Picture 1 (tube, rainbow, N blue to C red):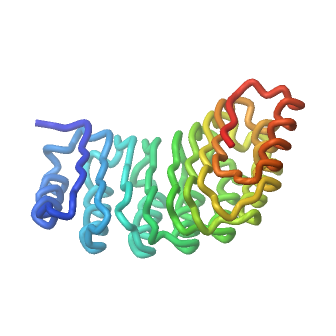
Picture 2 (picture 1 turned 90 degrees about the vertical axis):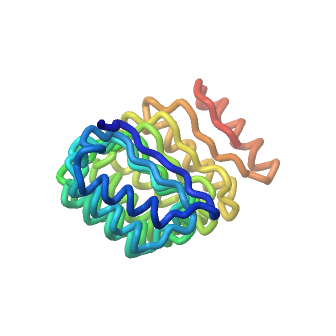
Amino acid sequence: MSLENFGCTISDQDEHPSLVQSVLSALRGGVAFQCLREFGLEYRHIQIIDLDALLDALADAACAFHLECLKLYGCQIDSQSIGKLAEHLAQDKFPALKHLNVGMSFTIADAGIVALCNGLLSAPCTRLASLDLSGTLMDHLGMATLGDVIRARRLTRLETLQLTHNVNMTDKSVFILAGAIQQTMNALPRLRTMMMSGLRKVTGVAVGVLVTTIIHNCPQIELVDMGGVSNRAGRDSLIQMLCTLNYKGTVRL
């Protein structure tokens, strides 16, 4: 038997240690997961030692060369685990990876985002079509390193970028992102969807700058979700600006 997709959601009531050990044994055995294309694990309190072991086993498994989707949604990854993942990316252990999701991991702060982005910068090649960094604690330092990845044109295949509900992000972070996109020709030529709703500390001014930058510099953009602009005047001015630009896509405010 071989699997192309594996995913599991572990609740607080599950006996997750035995499940983790079973998955580890299967990965290390190399039989059940030899054709694996997608690996997903959703659990908010998985032990870090187990997560590190899973990442190591996955990187060393025969399926790593073919893995296209890695979803660690809500796994509460700490700096050690995100560093482990970054190391595997830098070593090109997942050369076919197209979708990376570490969203809703509220333990990932700027240092973790910096480590992950440095892994992407060090990788021989990146094929990411979607990147989910939503629900983290990233701020301007993490965004500056993500900006470096964009400026290095390591995300030219990216179609979807998720940065929603990053509660620490401020206008400074948004301006850094806009600057990286504007300063690099064809930095995100395939970007279709930018999701950045729920940024409570970001003002309408910064939203306007970013939306304008994306529309002008991302030719394939279809949806920009910046929901959460609470100031009516800010929304009105953004709507007027979009009418002036004659943008045919969708912007959510």
